[in-house]
Image (cartoon, rainbow, N blue to C red; front, side):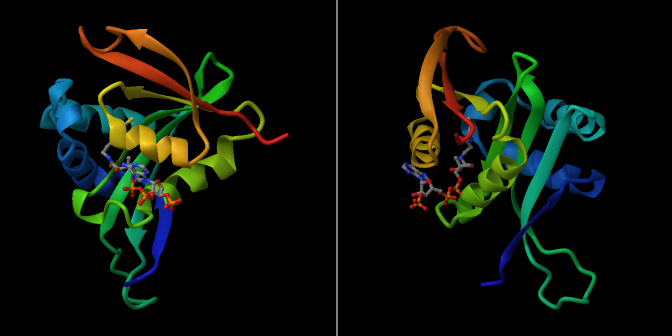
Length: 165
Ligand SMILES: CC(C)(COP(=O)(O)OP(=O)(O)OC[C@H]1O[C@@H](n2cnc3c(N)ncnc32)[C@H](O)[C@@H]1OP(=O)(O)O)[C@@H](O)C(=O)NCCC(=O)NCCS
């Protein structure tokens, strides 16, 4: 398999970012549609407080100039938690590529940029066991829960990973 690389997302990735988002049933259940996802990412890509990166296969031949297939993305807000800590707004990996380390690679990339000095926060829906497993495996702890925050009847669990001492 070709090695994976992380690179900043750009406007040529918009269609794929929307596609990856709509693969996630939970996001669709939260009302995400093709047009809302498109406008969300258009805004994110032009927002100086946002940082969106994709994980992709490296091009098959180094100098082919053809970018490799994008397998997933993550979107961070640099100081999105309390104007102090970084906040992981959205992350998704293609269902066909889950469990192969793509999500971990994205998370490690952003932790390298934002874990210091004030840690990283994120929210996970209480029913999303798989994402909670992923974050716990990556050193995040559940520090709270907000009822009915995004959708009535759904709780958002607050996870936090502090900066290393
Ligand atoms: C959550 C998500 C991004 C994880 O990406 P991924 O590429 O599948 O995860 P990785 O393969 O990089 O796994 C990284 C680590 O997490 C662990 N992990 C992944 N899924 C897990 C699960 N369901 N339960 C427990 N651990 C899990 C892996 O075992 C791995 O740990 P290890 O390397 O120590 O064995 C991906 O499953 C996804 O896109 N889910 C749908 C969207 C979503 O729920 N986003 C989060 C919203 S808050």
